[in-house]
Amino acid sequence: MNGAHDLGGMDGFGPIAPERNEPVFHDEWERRAFALTLAMGYYGLWNIDMSRYARERMDPAAYLRSSYYEHWLHGLETLLVEQGLITREELDAREAELAREGT
Amino acid sequence: MGKRTHHDVPSDAALRVKALESLLVDKGLVDPAALNILIDTYENKVGPRNGAKVVARAWSDPDYKARLLADATSAIAELGFTGRQGEDMVVVENTDQVHNMVVCTLCSCYPWPVLGLPPVWYKAAPYRARAVRDPRGVLREFGVALPEDVEIRVWDSTAELRYLVLPRRPAGSEGLGEAELADLVTRDSMIGTGLALAPGAAP
Image (cartoon, rainbow over all chains, first blue to last red; front, side, top):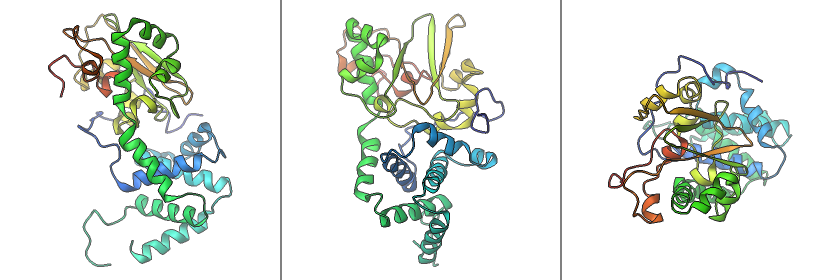
């Protein structure tokens, strides 16, 4: 399936701009998003193709606007919801709760 | 809310991840200690030094190099580097005629056991878009200018198959042992967006 992720050969994305002495992660939430994705993957409820398909179904404009671990986070949420492990509603509620607590 | 610096204002993603972890912990689906171990493994233990050892061995031992080019997965496993995102490895050799470069146009496929997690530029749109269309221009951006008669081969990784470039052994490295050779092998030289360092130039 093609889509916004299918970037090979596209023009107009600008310079590559490698970062010198780049750290493995740039923020704590990236570490957690990475580890949550790996940890949930160990249950074997989905394979790598399903994970990628979950990321590729992001809204195309949002995909191009967002960072790599945002793609992962979006993909993980989609898989967890589709496998019935969580609902969007309970995740939204938990997020609102944490925002109120100001953590 | 109080006064905050830009560091402690959670971006949407930061708050969302926190909510997701908290929910999954409450459901008994993840253990925060196990998450910390995964993070430590990929942040501190697995990385391009592994790949550098593979390259240095191949430069030093022709039999090993032959095994590496014939069946990379097994030859890399001889050095103890196995695991996810490295289940099926192919090593492509640079020569004075051919320069190899690796990309994943669709996402971020990368050989984790030998290179660790990919840098941001590898996963971002500009490299994924242009590596297959203008590899010579991309190489120039990385400061690599190859003679016009060198053929550039670009390998598009997939979820199943991961590539490692075997860079050319630098001139002047003849007397060096494996550990010293490994110091000449940069991450980018194993992606193909760089060359191995000349002896004396190593950091």
